[in-house]
Image 1 (cartoon, helix red, strand yellow):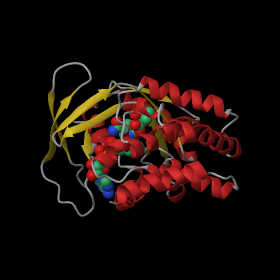
Image 2: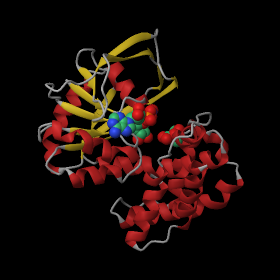
Image 3: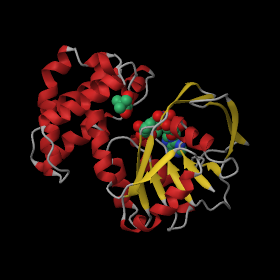
Image 4: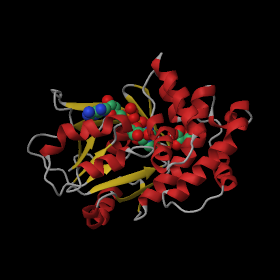
Length: 297
Ligand code: NAD
Ligand code: KPL
């Protein structure tokens, strides 16, 4: 049995993709779950299907727990349920950005904690409809020492979904690569309320992107993530912004839907890291503060 904590867009994508009967959602501790979660699943290709996913029952021991909550909810979500699972149960974290994964790995080092970086795209235009909006790749790798031994088992379990999974020993590096892209696209789309491609010609982006990439380059070097010039980072950001030009970023979508954004785990994480490492990060700080202000009213 594969258990999923967080029955939102990504959790429902995994639940719909894994073989039925092999997957269950984990209820919040105070929740009295009903019979099952039901929704329509619109795959990337092919006809819509009806999905029923049961709740994990007290006697079920999952082979792995997929955590698909937002970064800001993850620590508390796991803390509420982790006592139900044996120590050897692998925990696989799907959060965007950085900070939440390290916090979980540091708090529960005895558990095999793994992290995933995924380019799959899923959304819920209606509460009972899950749309697989874009197919991609998912890299999975260990965040704690004990997780290294479980990596192949976890990847094999996930392979049953038909989604494309890769084992990745250097998962932190992979998460950093995505962090850089998110840091250079997401806050601009939220502040400018525009699709990804439209940020490129804006004054806000033009005035700050070189300084932002300089901060990113310094932070990567100081935290052992290798040497990347600011120019190379800007090129990577702009390539993704052009490739996803008509997309609404996850951060813009969160703001438009009145949800808390993941800014604290993207530019906010980088600003905090700068403070810890003695590196100035005025652009990351400015973007973090301005996006935080968007969500407070
Ligand atoms: P979402 O908001 O749709 O889903 C999160 C779910 O977690 C919600 O249903 C929420 O009710 C639930 N939740 C919150 N606290 C909980 C708790 N204590 N116990 C149980 N459930 C709880 O978000 P999402 O789009 O599915 O994204 C989840 C994470 O995956 C984010 O970090 C996001 O950046 C990342 N991600 C998402 C996608 C995507 O396509 N949706 C792609 C890549 C990465
Ligand atoms: O990952 C993304 C997000 O929206 O969070 C990008 C790459 C910016 C695509 O929209």
